[in-house]
Length: 112
Length: 111
Image (tube, rainbow over all chains, first blue to last red):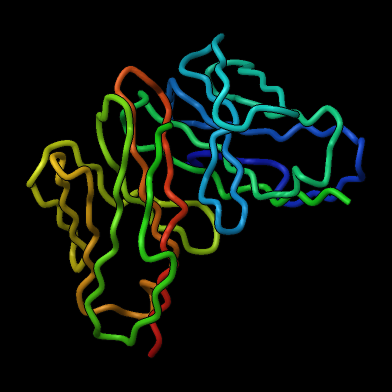
């Protein structure tokens, strides 16, 4: 039982390049989330999807887009990467918003 | 603005010590508070608290919520080196799918 799977685990980009981070969950959860984690900043919500076909902005959405492809998959896209987007990105899912979220192992993204 | 504040931000103790981690919050329409442990990679769920004054316990870890004073504590007794991690507190807003996280407390347990 894989839970939440994120790909890739590591990526280095140049400023201006585009990139899609993939996330898939096998727990039949309705809600999915994308966070970024920077040193000393905790987890900050980028976008979330309460159900298939819906997406909403979180605390720090600028520079990102998302797609809820189906119930299992929720992708995060950086159209034109900037050094300020260097971070560790976590995907999470839950059955409903108030239920505990299950996290993937993260994607460490460096933008030069 | 909704916020969750954890203290201390970092803590170094010796094996066998007891520690108390704090989480205070100001969130519109509070629904529940969650504690997570983060070691190398993904945060893992510890507790979810919705009712005031009811302690949740798992082994050496326990947590309690005070909805009147808007805070929660996480206690770890007889700490072990394996308890070394970042402990994250998060609050769920009612009518929302979103969690608001604190910045975390980094706990280091030395042998």
